Amino acid sequence: MLALVLALAASVTAGVQSAEPQTGASRVALASITDPRNKPLVDVSADDFVIQEGGAERDILNVRPADYPLVVLLDTGVEARADFPALQKAVLHFIERIGQRPLALGTFGSMPKMLTTFEDDRQTVMARLAGVVADTMGGSLLLQGAALAGETIRSTGTLFSAIVIVSATAADASRNRPDEMIASVVDSGAILHVIASRPGQTAGGGLRQGSTLRALAEQSRGEFTVIYSASSYQAALDRLADRLTTEMMIEYLVPVGSKPNDVKVGVRIVGAKVRGLGVAPR
Image 1 (spheres, rainbow, N blue to C red):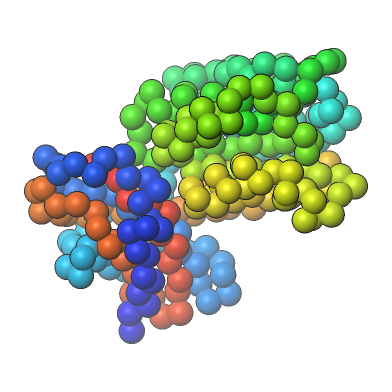
Image 2: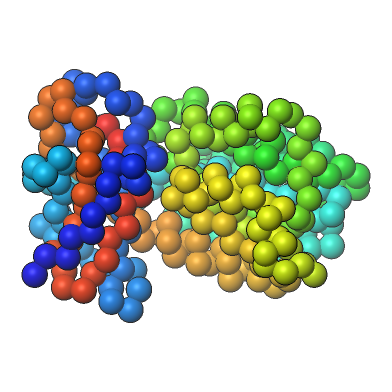
């Protein structure tokens, strides 16, 4: 029995880097698979997948765990000072869990800045993370930080990528023009994940104040998670690590010059569900 999830082009092209005819002969789809109990499935092979483009089935070359680059941003604004030890510890554990993929670390308090590059080894990243402290003045520049992460990713030309923002405040003190900051995130093609602490607020109020980042996260097929205490950073980042470490990259053959229109990703596992997260040229 074929469990075929229809992922139309409008919903899976977040990772497409180009709509021009390709000179190569393959593309890569990013997807996650869950069982009937919504638990991730990772013991899958190329024979388990089906990919169609415009109604034509494509031959699958290989399937492997996703290991695309991540930018992780910590809130070091003055309002993060009380919760920063818990936030920092949770991010440290998150990085330990996601495996040896390229990772760049940055902060967005007072003035967003990158602390490491994708070329730095994990030991360097961990050392820089351990040395980060919250600012004694200056707000949290969430959207400016996201824009900096987008610029950092865009320069790599990677097929897939993600930005992970860990925020300790509802307030965004960003000073640049919103349309320019949003464009930097969108143009990067990155999947955006935001974990935002909103202590003392209702869920609705917190989401309204983070509406721009929430919209960007949803449009990129990422997640916007609201927490209400410092102790919840760890649980939220653990859930995100589970997602990232179970995503799959599926490479498949395409005719030269074809375009990724009406892409549908399915799996030959009874009861399984597939979530398409993007398609990119090889």
